[in-house]
Image 1: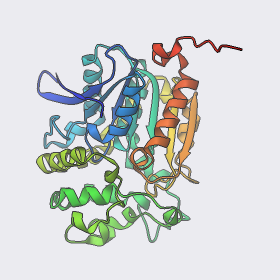
Image 2: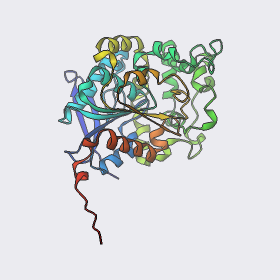
Image 3: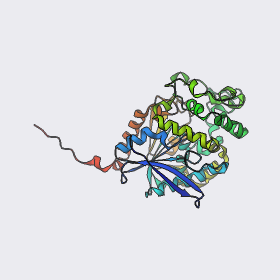
Length: 361
């Protein structure tokens, strides 16, 4: 495995710390990987290994609320205005002024925010599963694109976003359920996708009605109830999975869940501070997780704002569930590498530009 070095950077007048891992040549082109809910830096292991090996300088933080980064139990600490400060501090600590950024899930919401408010730090943007101008604009925006053929309002008033409403209604109950068995919860959350679920409502659509996750079950399934091979965590080294489990047990889910408690504040801040009315001019790659029934970009209207506002947009679709970067790591890495070559050829590591002369006989 590629050796990952560990780093910490303080920000917010020394009150907060972002922990991150890094690998690859110090002078290599910088790629920063931003995880979502839940996760730690090392859940990007397949990407860190591949792109460090290609000659890129790769960096991945434990996002605020996770791992070894500051995990305050204050909702507002996880508003996008605060998260952006942390990402800018991370970038500054690398000694660079800009980077190619890659993100997934809530990491995508954070990266879309950064690209809109601070486009000057983004050479290119790659987001997985979560398209532009939705999550970072809050629940109000997400509700606008609910597919009412799939989610009739009488039966599914909040569409697939019922779980986000549940956080607002009973945050303590939602969070304590996850905290009851972090290892078991992680196995369930990181489950692989299935084509059989494409046309079915997401399980997250009934969380309010059920009074909790998984039909209102009193506790999560235990780790040994999840068959081997069913979870994308099985595609990570055992030591990384153990570190993730221990990290979530240590911090709890408060920080991760609190990202969902700032919808109105995020919407106001992002709309007020977006440069160029939110139009993104830098090269953007969106990777669809085709079997993701929650983010649900396949055959839905969720990508329409992104298509309108991203002026240099490329899109790819991979037959996988939400955790596409783990379930189909090689394919995901291949798409990213190809896009970098085609959209940002000058950003490819310099040693790859050495001429190769074919000899003729």
